[in-house]
Amino acid sequence: MKIFPVKIVLTIGLFMSICSVSFAQKDNTDEPEKVLQLFVTEYNADPHRFFDSRIPKDFRYTNAEGLFSFRESVVKGAEGRSSTNSEVSNLKFFKSGDLIVASGIHTFGGNPVAFTYTLQKQNGRWMFAASHHTAQKVK
Image 1 (cartoon, rainbow, N blue to C red):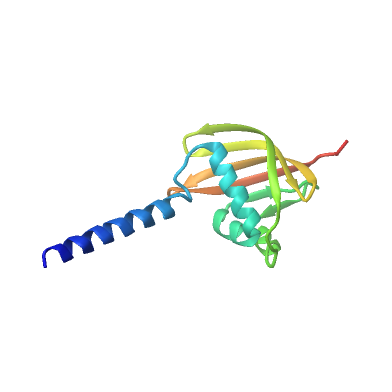
Image 2: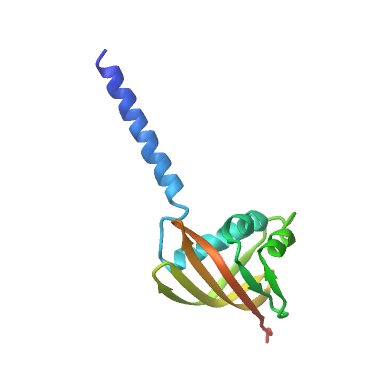
């Protein structure tokens, strides 16, 4: 009879360690390259969910045409968008405490834009604080 409670405790402990590892993988890194790749992966899977969950109320975005947008219009503009395929390259990072500034080329469907993304850790979670795109000409 004493073995049964031990098995329960071990099973619960194992289950909790598996859950904590799987839940912690989302934001358990402060390495700029991994944080940006997490963002790109989430964005590609579901742009609307990414924007709704990763951009704070004071988010600012300037697109490649120079139009300035806030959180509400970016989230609304992503409604109904399906998964996509984009990739980042030519990356440069600056990190100071809970702030990462990333720049490089973000290619959306063959269309490259130069970007500067500001990522800020808020309440233990990396958020997409600001974004700026500049159109690039393909030679």
